[in-house]
Amino acid sequence: MMQYWLIKSDPETYSFADLQRERQTAWDGVRNYQARNNLAAMQVGDLCLVYHSQTNPGVVGTAEVVRPAYPDPKSDDPRWVNVDVRAGKALTRSVSLGELRKHPLLSQMGVVRQGRLSVSPVTAAEWEAVMELAGEPPR
Image 1 (cartoon, one colour):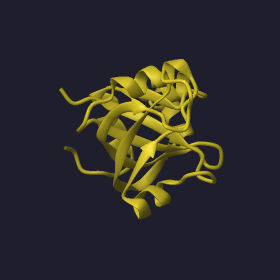
Image 2 (cartoon, helix red, strand yellow; image 1 turned 135 degrees about the vertical axis):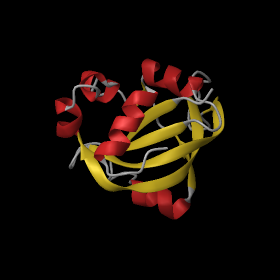
Image 3 (tube, helix red, strand yellow; image 1 turned 120 degrees about the vertical axis):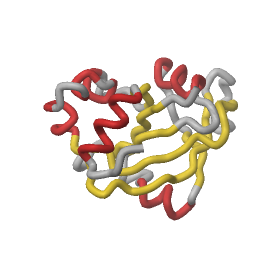
Image 4 (tube, rainbow, N blue to C red; image 1 turned 45 degrees about the vertical axis):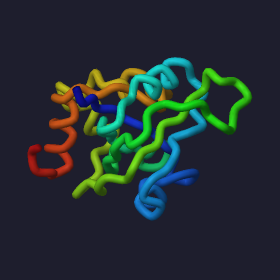
């Protein structure tokens, strides 16, 4: 069964435009145990909301998991993992953190409750609400 996720990136380090240009990348550098556990739970075909942190925080695009968790080759500790994601589409308009906080359904999302968590699960209802706010057609 497909799951939904939110993956965060600082756009000055790696932006959604970078992902679109590269088409696919290893989602790496996660060094929080809860975020790592979320990465480890991802399966091929799961969909991700790509969230820019820091400057103008908000959801800016989508991605799809194309390779499940594997050991992070940049770490000597085998407990740290990466997944590979493929760029989806840029949202018609980004959905700001402020909008997420104000929306009754979205105010309990991981990105709102645990702002520093870089990978968090998203419910199907949350996914649809974000897509609606972004002006995207329903699935």
